[in-house]
Structure formats: structure tokens, C-alpha cells
Image (cartoon, rainbow, N blue to C red; front, side, top):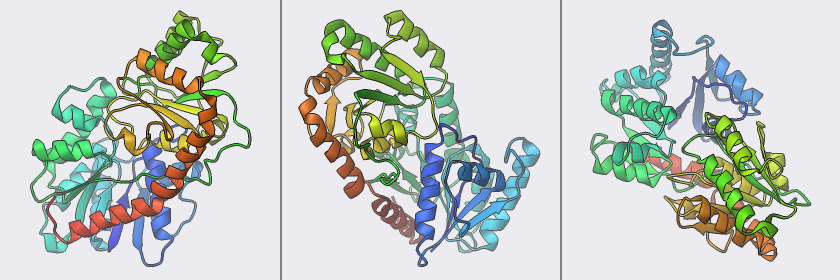
Length: 394
């Protein structure tokens, strides 16, 4: 198969862009095998941003197009991007064009391609990479502007294109898509079974500090205020548990000021530090516990997997496919509800049993090196592409 991974519109990756890094790493892995014919179709601006983030350093298998500084921003730019992508994908006779990031930029191209006769065009597949999409299309309205924009972007694809396949990072979306008939019956829908990160980059430090970490976008979906309130719960009801421990939050986003205000309200300025850095490997290397207060889902959380690779135990809510990453008593603690009280209780349980940490740290890393590997993910998505080319029905 000839595969095009499409990723031309990429913003600043300093401190964000987990999905962009993820697909760049996947491309480099697939392209390193001569048996694969996989191209990363991108823009020169996007490629420079990937390389600034330490990705796509090898030039083989990359098609950097001249698309300007803001591909798809404005009507004229969108027309130019669409024409260039149509020319590249049709002239090179790809079997699959995989839209890695479901931004509206690629909708016109996908709409044209999926309306051409099948014998003369590649199959078009879409990656669903946001865990809020399933709930937004099923049972609740978007929580904030970010979720509304994500929901709108996916609506464009479902309304204006006839996708040949959708590869979702979440089983919940695959279930909702079938139940709500969001896609044509002929569309192959597959949910990922694996995730991956680089265990060589994310490794435990020789000596671990007494640090608990929250890392993620400071937005409603990540629930950073719940983390702050959980630390306040510990300080109120079990202050001895946090003696000599530091709580560190890494991320930026619309709730940054609210997080600072909540820390001040609880008098936690000496306990919680809010910071930001593009590479969290040194942070995860020395921390002991990663806490995810994320709503909806934890499976495929890149930050969580990076923390696990670096030998962190995990506390997370039992929601979605969380247990794919966090196995109670094995590498972490799963709490029943997403409240400050339950997260606080989960952290207290971990902090009061330091003798369990070493076994949990080893188990976390083992899940990364033995189960959630790039080899397993690559085999899974390649199998999906073969099914799409073969004309299977999801």
C-alpha cells in the first residue's frame, strides 16, 4: 500500500501538540522499513515546527509543500491548499490518504476525493483523536469553546464527505458513530487497541523525588481545579500525608488564572507550583505519582503514558478505557468518581503506602515497553488501512 499521512496545518508545538508528535513518530517508524511506502504530506512551516520539537528529523518519506505561513487560513489560502493536496494525492496514486488531525482545512479536499469514482482516487480515512467527541455527539453539549470547535470540525467531515474509514483512539466514539449513524454504512470504523510513546526518552531517574504531577491543558475537560481541590482535601483531612511532598502542575490554557486563584483561596501557594515546559521527560523522570483528573477518558493520554514510561504510579478516574492504562493495585489507583474528595482519597491511599511504589513504577513502565508499543500500534493501524483498501464494512 501507498499511504499518505496528511498533516499540513500545525501550530506552535511548544508545550502542546501531542497528536502531531505522535503521528510524526509513527511516520518515522513506518518509513524506516523499506517494505513500507509511507509519506508524510506536510507544509514547510509545519515541518519546521515538527523539527523544532525534535520530530521528523530524517528527510526520507516527507513531502513538504509550499503552502505559505498559515495553510488554510483565509479563503484564497484554503483554495490553494485544496488544489495542491488534490494534485499530490491523485498524481502520486496513493491507496490511502489518512487525515491525522481532523481540522476543517482538509474538508474540501476530502469532499472532492470521496466524490470521485473509486477506481481513480485514494481511500480517505480520518483519525478521531479527541475524547470529547463521543459525548458531544451523543449525550451532552460541548463544555467550552474548545469542545465546540472540535465538535464543529468533525461535523464538517460527517456532513460534507463520504469517508472510507475512521480510526478512532476511543471505542466510545466507534460505538456512538454506529448507534447515531454519523457515517455511511460502508465506512470502516475501527477503535485503536494500543498507544505508544518513546520509552528511551521517558525513563525513571536514578533517584525519585517526592513529587506528584498534574500535566495537561488547563481546560474544563482536564479539570485542573479538581486537582487543586483534591490537594486541599488532603491538607484538610490528612496533612501528615503530604509532609515533604511537592505538587506540580504543568500546562497552559484558559483556566490558568482560575487555577492560580483557587490555589490562593486554599492557601496552597507553598504546596502547589504551576509551571510549563515543552519537554516533560525530566519532570516525569524524577516524579513518583501522576494524577489525571481528566473527564470522559484516559486511554491514549500521551502525558499519562509518558509518565508511566518514566516510572510513575497513576491515580485516575475509572471512566472510559482508563483500565487499559491503569490497573488497580498493579500500577496505580482507580477512583470511582471524578470529585475532589475521591481523588484526594486516592492520593492519600498512595501516599500512605510508600512501600508499594517500586512495584507500581516497574509495572507502569512494563505496560509501555511490552504492551503499548509503537510496533503494536503500527500493526493495528496498518491492518485498518488494509481493511479499507479491501472494501470492508465497519
